[in-house]
Image (spheres, rainbow, N blue to C red):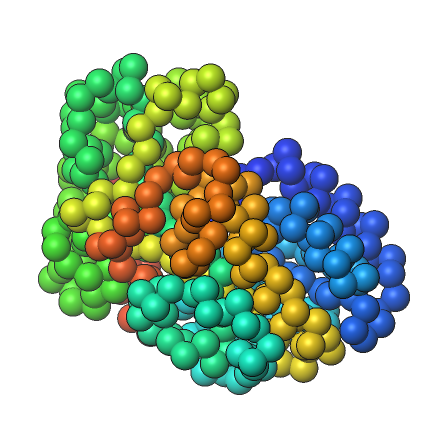
Length: 351
């Protein structure tokens, strides 16, 4: 499970919740209301408002904090959603279980802007049969340059004993073990028990002794206050907490030569969606270069999946798209996920 970077904007989430509450009073009217189920504050209000105005419709935005929450709600019957935004491994699961409507690319001409290398990585649905990429990114490392003026851009920074008591990593087994596996030169999706044991030793013996804690929610605040000098996390969360005037004191990187785990979140239309036509229009609208650039600027994202929006951005991204060149998409491991659970339990709950 990935505790999403998308949950970081609690200040914005409050406003978004009020928007959702205001809109949920609208009666369901096929073709006039789009029911969007997405990660917390992952679609800017400004984009939603422009879509509503341009098409004369309403958007109801419900949010979730994890793929697991979204999946469980849809399996339980959902609430008539027209669009959901799962990560790649859950697109794979939902596709195999017949939970998704087919995508009609003829109704999404702006899908032409999705980069070919993104689709090559999206092995779960490379032809966009049931999904269209929304964003591709990865967790990385933030360093306080005042406190740590010299460092290598490597996951091995967590092995530095001189920084003990000033670092944290995420409470996320696929991310942490994936970092160790990438550093060792292995796939972040390996099911080789010997390789996982090596990753265990790296995390447990070399990194964990230097960490204050594993923290997937408060890492950005702890970094911004100066409590931690080095944290694993998501750039947009960190820069949202650090005052603008202090941004130049932050180094954020995804170890380019080593790679690591990454994600592709994708638009999907749930089976039985009542407003599939409007869902297609929203996906096409969102991928329009000027609108997608607005989305990217809202979060300081690079144009990782889009071939035209980058030139329209007004905000310098917090990291470059090519930082992901050696990153590997986390795949659905099926029953083999238990191998990771067992290793993670040993790390998290033993001295």
